[in-house]
Image (tube, rainbow over the protein chains, first blue to last red):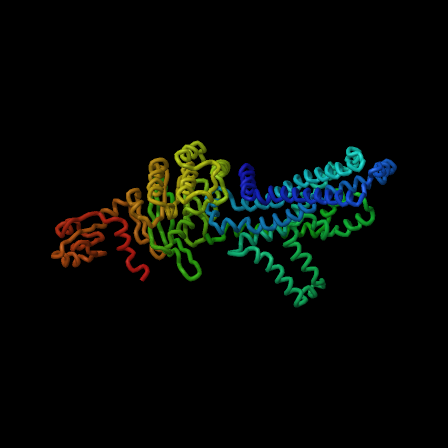
Length: 322
Length: 285
């Protein structure tokens, strides 16, 4: 257990840029863009003599809202908080993708694998520490940064509105920052499971490729997808060609992007129906997102991912090219 | 005490070349063994087999473990310095010490820090900011603080200047080596390890061609400096090698009668490098 902790810590040391600075910088840029947008809007508004809500009209609108309207305002504020997470999620996806591709390859290339392998650490725990760093450590840091950025975003929004005569604190009470935090953190276990086949595939390529792991990792599934499309092989199983693309190529490569499980998993439809049927409510609600656990797509992916990881461990043990 | 390493019939095939060809040897504890051979003779392959880094055919037992199956446990008792470039470039001195201290059960932090205090290395310094010599100092500090039973050095001083090279072997002898430890070293700078070795192994084309302790080498191989007039007589005794220096001939004999050689001229123990050159004649031909 202690060894595992230090193995993960080592990953954090090595990839501090991707795991720690990338989300912070992204969050900073997100806030900066927001502030710039607000300033532009204010300047334009002032130039054209529009002062939104100056007469206290906006405040009056809010005070006349009923409970349903208020909850919608709260939801809008929550969405503002989630939106901060949106950009971070894309960045996280890229970080995890390239981290996995390099995790078992870079140290073979610079031969530092010989140093790591001179220590009494099993190859299984090395590989698993990298899986943990990719699927747990990196998302936790991103979510924490996302929460802070989301809070700042709310604060900026509230302060801006306060210039227009809207009471800041009254507004913030309408939002549910703790529920948003809870939902985001609660999504991480789903991400671990959903990302497993992609993480497994990327780590396998990373442990196996003698050079250019990126090319192998992307070219193999895409080329086989093209072959399948070309020859219409899926017809043999009475499946459309798109089945291969969405269940093999996309699952094997893009599942490292958080949220793809909820968009493309079996409950993708239920997610969409939730948004259309009850708009203005919390679509990130765990009772909603966790329905993904009922999807065979998820669990088949977990099994395939475990097999790919076993392969990665085997190659880590026996690949002999240093 | 039983042998540290016993190998029999060690064979490793890389595609078309045979890196190890039915090699058998035995290494006792408390020895410093030089594994010497030309480029591509199989030295590194032999070390990788011992470390469980490669698959092979044949029997091999290292400290009672099978390196293929029990590698994780074996590495608790074995240390390894490949060559100078293998410490990860991003790591800081303090991180390297912290990491090894926490994953290696036999690491003595105080010893490591005492050794580092004698160098110019700073805790915040990264490997990428260090010279080759400093990297080796760091690696050596880490390894010397581990109470291992077997230390394997593969070209440890490659590319270092003479100060670092001398210091490296001196530290090993003074602060590390004792009768419970065994060191195996491969190097091309034979002259530098000559005086610290207790055993000598020559490897050529995957075969062990010489395996003896240094005393036996001194008894078996004799070099004679012969004046030109007696050279014919020396040649008749079937020497391994002959070379000319300042008008005299130097002959190298394997297992010849010492008294007889002394009549021909001045005898002495050959240097390892001369012995090596004589033994490996024709390797690249």
